[in-house]
Image (cartoon, helix red, strand yellow):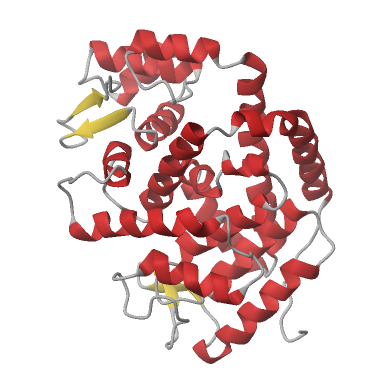
Length: 341
């Protein structure tokens, strides 16, 4: 299939990042079977689903996602609950899918978007564009070309001679560029890159693309726009590889430290043991518990970091279900979610 092939520039930075990731994998891959216990797989699945839907403005907390997975009734918007239930079903089958199969891709979209869009499991029939404040920032290819473009892209990612981590990033961008579905493209693109990475190592079941993107959401969309503006998916690939590398460095540190210190800190703070806390996050939690009405400016001054760093750490803590915000930005208060017993 030669009708469509991604255009990308493989920079020295991209090659170096792929080598770094391979080296980290070699360091931690030897203990992957022991590490990937059923309980940790479950915890990771919950974080993955929550992160992917958080990016799409789903309002459910990580505790509510956990309750839905456990079959409990929760109060919340019907659409948001439906999105979580669909994602649970789709991710339950994801790792058994063939990442190069168009049939499996369509089936997963059908599971993910069942009852949310009338054409779940089918390519879009109309033309689509992405707009910002009324201005088009991306016009996707015509609907009639979608089937051949996706078929060519799947054939490309299966047969191209590139490191798996690199071509999974290029695939992710190209999938979003094609925008093959009327809805659910972001969720599917992130899910399919995770599946492609899983072919390289089971460690990526610990390190889903969805969670990484949730932490760097603004930079993620900026990288997509830059690749589109420069007609070069290598720009997005370099961003994603950097994010993957950084997340894997943190994962390696957790292995090397045995995570004992983190668990002790969580016990003292009264938060969940499965959440990995950084030094600044621990300080933030301690300050929030002592003063729920503290401002971001005051947090920054007391911890001696920038306000942007405080906001980024708070965002991570909210994604992980450790911190919630009640009320408005001006008059609301912070709530530290206590661990369940």
